[in-house]
Amino acid sequence: MEAVSASPGPWFVALPDCEDSAGIVSRLRPRTTFTLVHASGRPWVIGSGPDARHGTETFVHVEHGGTRVLVAGTHGLAEADLMVWARRIRHLSDVDQLAASLSGSAHVVASVDGQVRVQGTVSGVRRVFYTFVNGATTVAANRADLLAALTGASLDTTRLTARLLAITPSALLEPLWTGTQAVPPDSWLRLGARGEARITPWWQPPPQELSCVEGAPRLARTLEDAVAARVRIGATVGSDLSGGLDSTPMSFLASRATESAEGKLITVRIGVADPTHDDHIWAAQAQRLLDSDHVTHTVFQPGELPDMFEQIAQPITGLDEPTRWIRPVARLRETARRLGGSGAVVHLTGHGGDEVLPVKPNYLHDLMRRRPALAREHLAGMRALRRWPMTGVMRALAERRPYGQWLTRQADDLGTPFPAGNLPLFGWEYPLRLPPWVKREAVVELAGRIHERAEGAEAYAPARSAHTTIDLARQLGAAVRLAEAITAREGAVLQAPYLDDRVIEACLAVRPEERSSPWSYKPLMVEAMRDTMPAESLKRATKGEFSDDFFKGQKRHRGQMAELFDNPLLAELGLIDTKTLRHMALAAYPPGLPWSSLDATMAAENWLRAQAQAAHWTFDWKDNHVNQPG
Image (cartoon, rainbow, N blue to C red; front, top):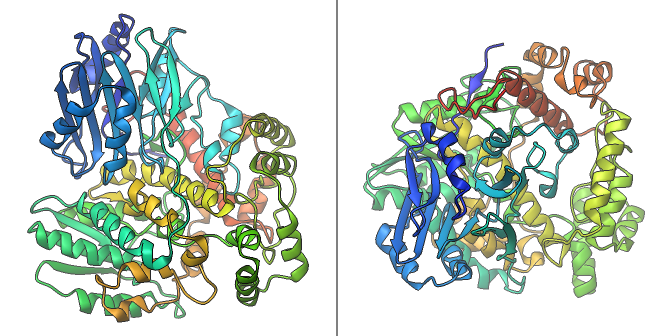
């Protein structure tokens, strides 16, 4: 089937201040649109800058003495502002303050007297990858496939197996080529003058010590800044408006920002035929309250946009890893196209709100040790809501393994059935389970890799609930990163302000028992938006459910699934059993097996087919993918 291309977007390669970089530059230069240099005159950053298809992307670069700084992405930093920072920087560690002050989502690259710092964002929406070229010189880039092309790296099938987990934790979202590594999102990469490299942590989550009332103003301010960073003077902006407590605040903030910038706002809602769905009630109310000369509302009626599962068999080229949003990929494209046709350059999504605003139920595990009386009250409420059996609750509370030991246990259980749906999940992350169609040999190989990782594994935060928030934000950050590439080619670029560093920090700073409660829905957002949104729009305590949309799409596009799983490349790699996969995906999906398992397998197979269509790669960006020398 004909492939569908995603835009590679702005790309860059950061180089150490050494003579060995010249050969790398010569290989990349035919596809570059800019070259920045160290104070020595040697190349420092080369790449291709943003074009009109990447509406809010900007590259801002300044030089001061032996210091050079580049901020690339979505941000509101002007050149004069960046120069103020550059004058303060004496050492690479001084860049910490710049990074901690940025609103939006951007890479930061600095050269200080020939030493290089490269970093992305805490959520991983902006990632940094690195590899050794010619066995000695370390180079960094914002795309893993570009580095794999430089070294002729082969596929790491064990890392690919990790992408078949029902939910792949962020620590296992590694580049899929041998010898290519990712910089942890809380760290920066140092490139030395002799081509050596070192990882340095710089970010840590704030203490969870604020009350909801204390933390709400900070969230309101950071979210307002995050939205404003994506609104340009006179520009048209799209924003989700489902009526929920993620997208509705986004639309009110976007309305304020576009009005201030003398621009326009287009809100978007996807209609659902399910009569039990109540998005339309709350969205209509919000629309009335948002009515203004600069705001228009778009509602896509049921059937107007592509179905779920539509186009899943069309290989998506231009991605350096599988997209977990494979099921709605056709809908993503069409929404971007429609918004772009109306003049919008960016599409603000409410995705990320579920990950960072509330906390997952494992906060009860932490709370039971800090405030047992309060924990028992919350636990009683949660049991009533979720119908947890007391035996399951007691067993989950009694499990106290530190993260590394918990990870070891998950490795041992990779091939076992998924936990029952009525049991509380109080672990550090979602249970690591592979679906039944993954071959035993692949299960064993991945288990061994996880065992190795578990030996030195450290949690992202001391509390399980904070670790889980960060992990979920990074999982979603990986999906949003690829969605930006997919939508940029079509029109309005999808962006998720909830995943900006400052917004994540604002949420994490609030005590978990005040971010979630059995008796209130997203209380932190309600408190933060009291001065921004009308009270009636803050009363919603429900969330739209899309299973009807899911099952209708699956039924209509079963042929797409059959085509995707006909002679799958995953089977050729020895990772899955084709007969088992086709039977379970097309005939008898087993009860208790998460649908995310199918998403993961569809995404991996689609990605492999996209790579197969570029089997003899060159550095050709015209077809929107980096090509590997044959």
